[in-house]
Image (cartoon, rainbow, N blue to C red; front, side, top):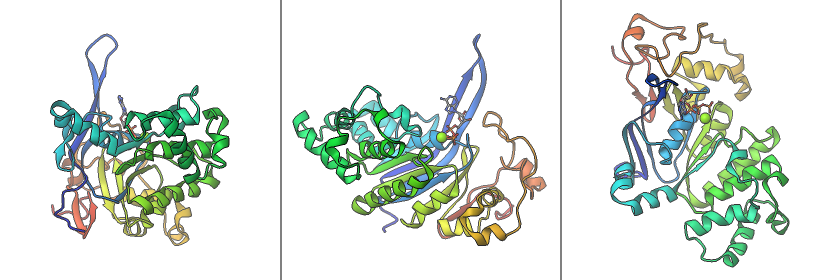
Length: 338
Ligand SMILES: Nc1ncnc2c1ncn2[C@@H]1O[C@H](COP(=O)(O)OP(=O)(O)OP(=O)(O)O)[C@@H](O)[C@H]1O
Ligand SMILES: [Mg+2]
C-alpha cells in the first residue's frame, strides 16, 4: 500500500461537543463526546472502535458518516473537506454521503414498521439512482436477498419488519446499507442486538462482503471479542477509546495479547473468554471511583482517576498519543517522554 496515497477518508483532530441547555435558558454544560480524534481510512481498511458506554463511539461513527457536524477539526473525503463541500459543492457532498454509509446501533429503529422488505430496500436504490423503476427494483431486491441468504427471497420480499427474526432484520439492514455499494460502512454495534449463536454468522456475512468488494469498515463494539474477530481476518486495527479520545490503537494481536494502556489492560481482563492464556493472568484492578463524565473530564490524563499506575504528571498533563511500534499507538505517560 502506498502510504502517500490520499486516503478515502481522513479525520483530523475531530471534536464533537454537545451543548446541554438548561430548561429555563442558559448553558448547563458541554459534553465532550469526541475530543480530539485523528484517523485515516483507506480502501478495505477495517478499524474496530471499542470502549465502554458513553466514550463517544457512536458520535465518532456518525461524524465519519456526515450525520453529526464536528465542533472542531476536519473530515476529508478523498482529500476534500466534507463540510466545505456541504456549503459549496452539494454534489460532492451527496457523493460522499452515498459512499460512506452508517448502519445504526438500534436495528428496530432503522426500519419503518409499515414498509415491506421490498419497499425498505427499494427506496435507497431509487434515491441514489441505482435503479430507474420499481419493476427493475424487484429483480435487484430478490438478488440482494439471496446474496445475504435470506431465502427463499420470494417469501421474504413482501414481509414487514415485525415478521422477521432479529438475525434476518440485521441481515436486511446490512443489505440496505450495502445496496448502494458504499466504500466505507460504519457499523455501529451490529451484533449487539443479535442472538449470540447468530453473531458469527453476521460477522461472516460482513467478511464475505469485504472479500468481494474490499469495503472499509468502521466496526463499533463495546467488547473486544468481536473487534478481534473482524480485524484479525482483515488485517485491521483496533482503536480503544476513553472519554472521547484514543488511548491505544494498533493491530488486534498486539492490542489484545500485549495491551499497553492500563485501560486496555482492564478491558482485556474483563473479557477472559477471549483467550484462556489471558484469563489465567493476574487480574488488573481499576481504582474504585465513579466513572468520570464527558462533561467534565479529569485534568491531565483522563484516565488517571481510575488508573492503578497514576503518577504526579498524570494528574497535570495530558499524555500525547505516541507511536511505540510501527502502527501501534498509546496515550500514556508510562511510555511517553516526559
Ligand atoms: N445528541 C446528543 N446530545 C447531548 N449529548 C449527547 C448526544 N449524543 C451523545 N451524547 C453524549 O455524548 C457521549 C458519547 O455518546 P455516544 O453515544 O457517542 O457513546 P457510545 O460510546 O456510542 O456509547 P454506547 O456504547 O452506550 O453506545 C455520552 O456522554 C452521551 O450522553
Ligand atoms: Mg453507541
